[in-house]
Amino acid sequence: MTPVTGRTEQPLAGLEIEDLRVTFDGFAAVDGVGLRVGPGDLRFLIGPNGAGKTTLVDAVSGLAPATGSVRFGGRELLGRPVHRIVRLGIGRTFQTATVFENLSVLQNLDIAAGSRRRPHTLLRQRRGVPEEVEQALETIKLTAHRDRAAGSLAHGQKQWLEIGMLLVQNVRLLLLDEPVAGMSHEEREATGQLLRTVGEDRTVVVIEHDMDFMRSFATSVTVLHAGRVLSEGTVAEVRADPRVQEVYLGHAVGEEA
Amino acid sequence: MTAYLLKRRTTLAGYALAAPLLFAVAPAAMSDFRLEQLARYLCFAIVAVGISLAWGRGGMLVLGQGLFFGLGGYAMAMHMKLADAGAGNLPDFMLLYGSTDELPWWWEPFRSPAVALAAVVLLPMALAAAIGYAVFRRRVRGAYFAILSQALAAAFAILLIGQQATTGGTNGLTNFGGFFGFSLHDPVNRRMVYFIIAGTLLALMLLTRQLFLSRYGELLVAVRDSEERVRFLGYDPALVKLGAYTLSAGMAGLAGALFVPAVGIISPALVGIVPSIQFVIGAAIGGRASVAGAVLGAVAVAWAQTTLSEEFPAGWTYFQGGLFVVVVAFLPGGLASLWHLATRRRRSRAGETGRVVAAA
Image 1 (cartoon, rainbow over the protein chains, first blue to last red):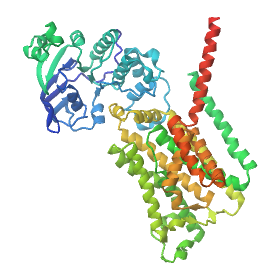
Image 2: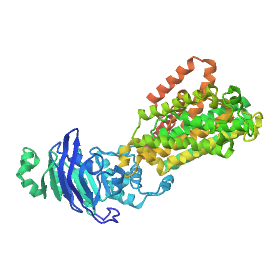
Image 3: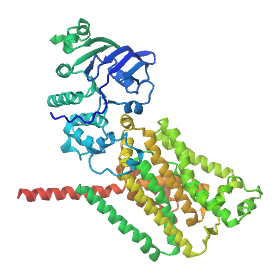
Image 4: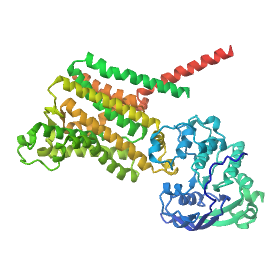
């Protein structure tokens, strides 16, 4: 694939989480998680339902109030409002693709690219397609669909559009919540390739349930269980960990290990 | 792209048609009395332009535009009262009620025409910015926002009624002699007021249309559809909404200010809950998401109200309510969406013919 991953003026940065806790009404959804994702890593976050994966991402992106410390590129994220965290280069997607259904693919990407624009430029009409939007369209393979309403896209295409929106935002850390859920086999393959491409010059964290998908594309894996880190390492290391096998007994990893 | 150009051409054609209608045909064909009624409807249409921006595009159901309409109206009326009374004199109604022999301090600035002109737009905008900042920051939206804005309009009307000595109370401010030095008893000057209103309406429609087409317009739709998502793109949705809300308040204020010389009165009955709802009904029936739809809807509803309520004073309210329910339930885009449905159908039929020809 041609190097079409967009502009990256800033160097790679890593995510460092220390003693992260998120509590809902006395229930600790995330219970003292410590986690380091190295610069440029493609990290998969797995674990049974209720392990605290999504809550962890919520805390990092500013959606759930948390204690502890989350640093990206040396900067503390906790305590900042959502849109300020985004401006530090952290972008996320949600389990259900949330694109602006009434706007075209192009408009979706253009809006995503625009948060750094000065207010007065917002009053002008869009003329032409910005460079980074063109590149992102290419990367997510939606160039042919750019004038379609985002609501009319197929499920997989919506997820790619969401990833494209993160690319034009020029994020340095992508947090993806189950990007291949509900996708066909071909779509999964394409998404995995897409993750590899965008991961070349960015740090990526993926929450995933699909073990085949994880085995094919993860560079490293963290297993969460009951709000804590159960195991961490390469795919092979994690699969060999007896505690992981116990948690996943009868599930994909245990079965095939 | 061609669809875009086509749309652009249709819109320009619409304006090319509307301008001579408003500026030449209507003044020539209508009696002074009817023209003054039309001026009144056009004031409501200006409010509707703001509603199409805040509600149609921004998703904020502004059920209390009467508040801003009233602020603009009272600011203008206070200036006109002071100008009529002349330097150093009290407005006539204050003498009549006799409860005060000194001009209240907050009336004083409105003696200056420049201050009054600035205030009719800036007062509503400043108040909307303050309300919006507090409300949108706390992520109040949907029905809660609608109820809140309606409560504010009600409170404003009640406040005006309670302060009879300084605001004219239920009677409001009326009996104006002049408008910036021009006598309102002269039909030519009244006609001029009509032209000012029509020109303001067209200018604001063009401005709002430009906003719809701008990146800000796209962003506003994005905020309406998924505020949370916009936040995750690094924008502050509160500020995006604040802009549209404040602008719509400014337009309502300007409409209120122009209403006063055109109709000759501003009173609590024109700024409370009922008129606030009527502003929204007009925009909803015409089509809140399109400027032209909202404007035509506002004019049509105001015209129907005058005409039908003369004939069926009791039935009109039910008819209006019924129409509102039918449109909201079956045609959420208002009557303007019928036009879009028709063009789409025509285009798809043309597409079929094209395919048949290609096959043959």
